[in-house]
Image (cartoon, rainbow, N blue to C red; front, side):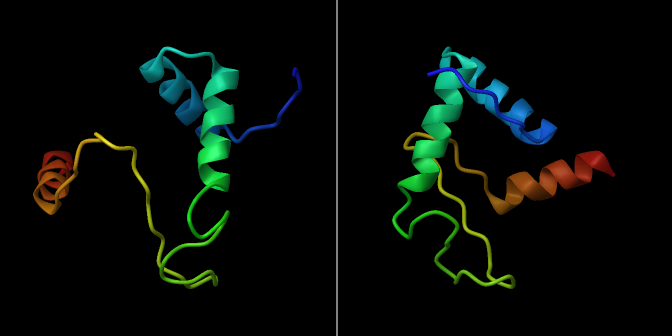
Length: 81
């Protein structure tokens, strides 16, 4: 189904990168990402630490996604300095 969406530029860029990485259309990528969000174990907009404004965010990754360690983050921060 064709429709028009007003996406935040950051969201659009992330969706385009996701689509390119998976070699699918932008529409298919957005559909897949929305379905993933809706099918989270706690439902949309909730996380394991709670669902209030001060809740800690949690992130879900796909099976086989690379693991980013604390050392990776420290190395990148050092590279930026």
